[in-house]
Length: 68
Image 1 (cartoon, rainbow, N blue to C red):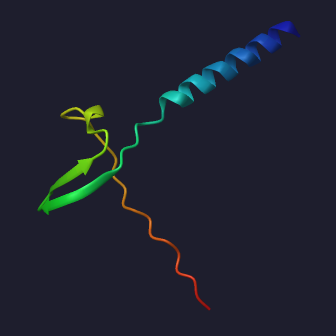
Image 2 (image 1 turned 60 degrees about the vertical axis):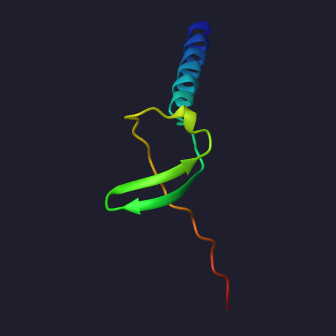
């Protein structure tokens, strides 16, 4: 019984620690210019980025349109 509790606790700690590493930094950016396949953006906390970093860009979500 004691081994099952220790094994369960260790599995839980491992799962929580690996899940925490999966979250990337989130930056708020504004697109300044688009020239072909190059985009220029101004970002808050841009000092967290380095040249060559791969980032994921998503567009702003538009609000739902309510009506009858």
